[in-house]
Image (tube, rainbow over all chains, first blue to last red; front, side, top):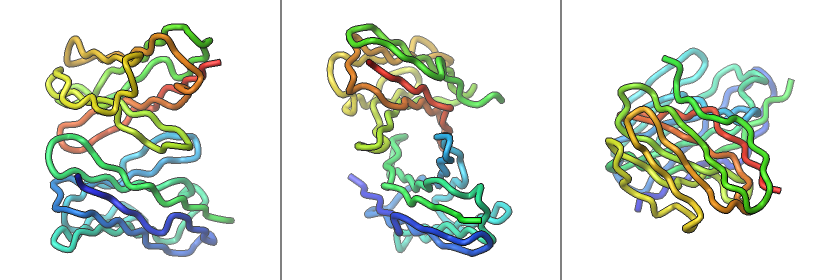
Length: 108
Length: 110
């Protein structure tokens, strides 16, 4: 089945810094999502982005389906951005395959 | 829309007891998923339904776990009998294409 790999596994930033998180997937996909799991454990939808580029405030994402990767950009990071960022993809059907996550810590 | 609703939010029980977790998906979504998250194993898919029919239950740990979806607006995940190793956060999610998660049920089995 499809494999999803995220990098880096951990990231520490100073508030105000920018960062890029990467997600590689092993096969073509028809669904790709980015989630943020906050320190309270809630899984928040960031982007539904099987291809192309989307922006939402300080966050943006780009998926290059032909090259099997997606990038999540966080600009001007804030302490509230801390948590774990998951990429998840599916090739067919509803079963999302999750990466192991990137744990982000933003220091004030 | 209220999003995916799960109850209870927290459950503490003793080993051997039956536990029932409940989920109400987002109205109009045709797929429903049950996940379990632990520090050791991360986020695992247990089972998912499409149009109320179980499609893939390969992630269900063992016969002590069962899930039902009697109608489009309700699903249960039951553990009988519960064991301490079942302690985890259990998430329900629903989707048409984009998947949305509920707040989770934190289960502790003593």
